[in-house]
Length: 274
Image (cartoon, rainbow, N blue to C red; front, side, top):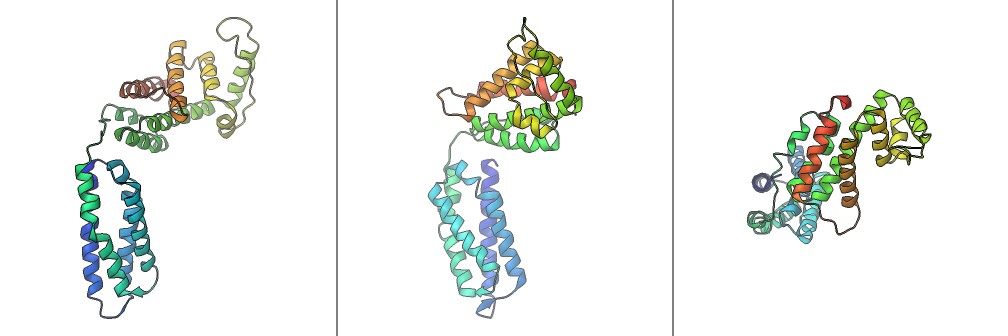
């Protein structure tokens, strides 16, 4: 979410809380039994937990406030799954609304943290499958909020998904055969590749063969050339640097190069069409 979307969502939630409180105040009994009110409450809480709670820390909302509103909405949700007292409903909703504007809405407005433009990165989605888009949309969301390392890790996962499925399409037996051939080579570029694999499923490929080894096999197989192999290896190094503690920074320039290489070498490459 961008800032404007978060502000609009917060305003919608505040308006819904005010409306819900008025509906409950009109209830003539001491307990709330109306299914319409319970359903509205559950829908509102679901919206909070699924859409808002995880977005707010990116806009300056502290962990303390996140916990505070998590507990308040949890209490409100608990009321909606049973017959609960009208006064308790009103008390919790009032507590949510008490500082809602100051603590959340105004804090988000004042937040000036860097939100990156990812328009140039979204081109990688052009030829991605729906499953890959799940990874890539999350990766791009991380990038837009400055979480560059997380973006790299998720982006690489999407690329390896495409590579694994392509290998399955070309033949897992053929992949295993290529590693046997490479292991026997004693000179030239592939002489240091001394491994062989007997892979029978994509799951086994993912769990037993390192990404770096897969890149070597792809080059030997003719699916990528030496230059493409080198560029992907740089991307894999960035992925490893991002996933483990270290001092090497990931910059916006690194990110742009990373996604450009994945798009051109993997997702737009006819050899990796699936």
